[in-house]
Length: 538
Image 1: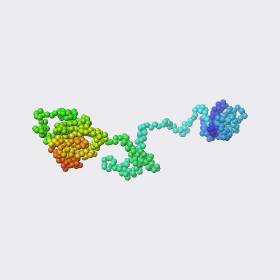
Image 2: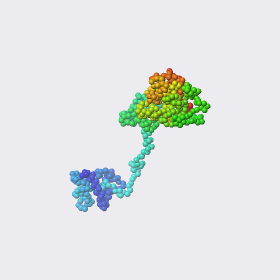
Image 3: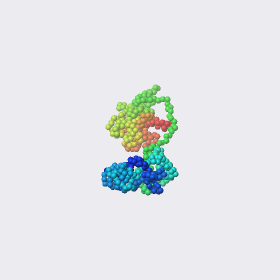
Image 4: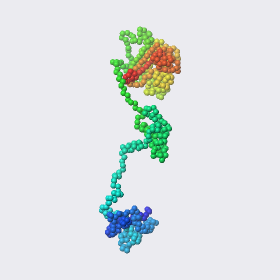
């Protein structure tokens, strides 16, 4: 059962008095005569003869016990007798209208648990009504405006919660940032521009340490935090300032909100565009298609001369030039031929051909034109970097002695023909084509590709670009001393492609024509590179 206090008892009596106030009204009484007021500097009950008016200062108490101090003995008696050690509740307190004139109180009698509580003449509890205010008693209160101005703030504001706009938040952020950021470390010499290019590139560790000790809030004593700023470097962050340094902010901005590569200024290409001069050209759309060239005035087309058994080209050599655009990555075949230097019976003449090599698996490759060995597990490092195929061109000639000559070269990168393409490939030395693999003189010679599969990479490489035109120059020069050239294995000349293309002499010096190397060579240049070299826009 809830604990009943003396204050609870007074509250119950006051409620009952209000509920039965009609008894007072019928007797011509009002709340104003029970209220306490200040008169002559004292707190007194207004009384029946002189009830409270608007001129009187009303006195209200925060506690009914203090308001009805004169009833304290009565309240103590009720509390001790009926509630302190009993199980009575507040509802056991009742007021009954007084009908027995012998009772002391004129209006009510007080009962607790059915028992009438007796009290002395001066123990009248009806003055509990003094804690109530009758709002109908005074129709309009009188307010002294002069006195009100002395104690009241007449500046009235609307009491609504303040709403911060997004722009205000942004303004506050930058205001606080400018307040909390330290001065530039350049003022301490922690970072500096030593080469005068207006970019700081020098870091001074001692000055940086002094700067951080002066301004970093990280690891600073609490009594010094007032003058500290945002921590400069991430390395100096403490637990409370993790990811709260200027360096962290710098990295976050760079990684998420700005380009991480400098944009090179676009330079306007003012070079002229090339305008073709020829009226037209003959296009051969597929490999291995034939063109018959004949001289209507004689049987000689300029290659044979008066003696068909001893054609001029065998002694004078020749040059083949053509523009080629490869339409796919896999097809191979003859670009130009005069006879067939590789046939087994009566081989003669020369041919310019292209072939491709296709990557297989992680390390292998096949050449559809020359081999189909998917189990082969070696290829030069760097091959197939831009495509799963590589394309090559080679010139093959059967010379006047019946020996086979071709345009393959040696190279430190595996004889790929263009050393920079496969820089880590094993070495492939330039081989004799005038002799067979065992070094014994042979009428038919030996095709380098038959020496080893790796030699498919030792001819002139053509980049795989299906939109580009390539100008091919294939030369055969029988005056080049191929057989007297340097075939020593592991020799720097043997492994130098430029040596086999007539541009390096026996001393290793670059020259325009050395007289040494392979009698056959093939060189290419793309249309774009040729136009650039001539000063035109590609």
